[in-house]
Image 1 (tube, rainbow over the protein chains, first blue to last red):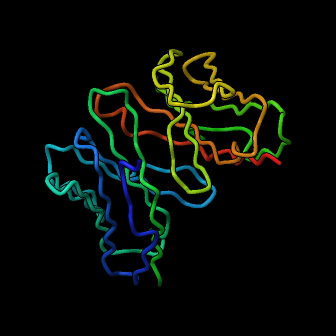
Image 2 (image 1 turned 90 degrees about the horizontal axis):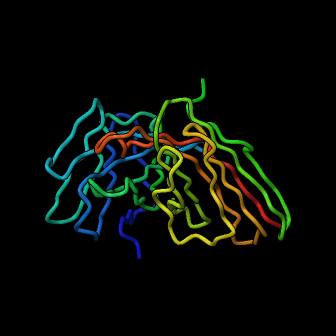
Amino acid sequence: DQQVKQNSPSLSVQEGRISILNCDYTNSMFDYFLWYKKYPAEGPTFLISISSIKDKNEDGRFTVFLNKSAKHLSLHIVPSQPGDSAVYFCAASTQGGSEKLVFGKGMKLTVNP
Amino acid sequence: DTAVSQTPKYLVTQMGNDKSIKCEQNLGHDTMYWYKQDSKKFLKIMFSYNNKELIINETVPNRFSPKSPDKAHLNLHINSLELGDSAVYFCASSPRGVAASYEQYFGPGTRLTVT
């Protein structure tokens, strides 16, 4: 049972344009959400997070939007750069829980020069 | 200076063997984790230790046994390896604290191939 879903396996965008990566979740107990970025042959690295008390969090070129009623979050990257080409994982957790992260399947982003 | 390191990076072994994967973190974190990324690319938690104490134990076969000699190390021992154990295993660590603990720092992964 996938509690965190990334339904699109890949996305290709041109350098300088916006990349929008989507994530849906089913567990209404989730209240903390994170995005991780992964390059080949490396471990995932933390990118940005958002608590359920917010609907937007911004860090430089990266912005995460949370729509709790729709159980949906998205990661916007603008402007996209070739170095952003990687697999992006959405993850969710419950505060006060056991610090367990539930990950989506990942989405491969390719930014073309 | 590597924050979370794992050895070996690649491990090829035959069915029935016993093998170990080592993990060390130099971030001073209290909590460490083992994740498995299978062929379908899902990253799933297996175990979590906090200050050498087991706090998360997912439904993992008891052939898998984590061992934490100190809070900077979390090793994974696998007995009687099976074909289905082939995967990439990631170690991770996080600092203590309600919000901070969610930002986990991952090692480079160990690709285990069972033949």
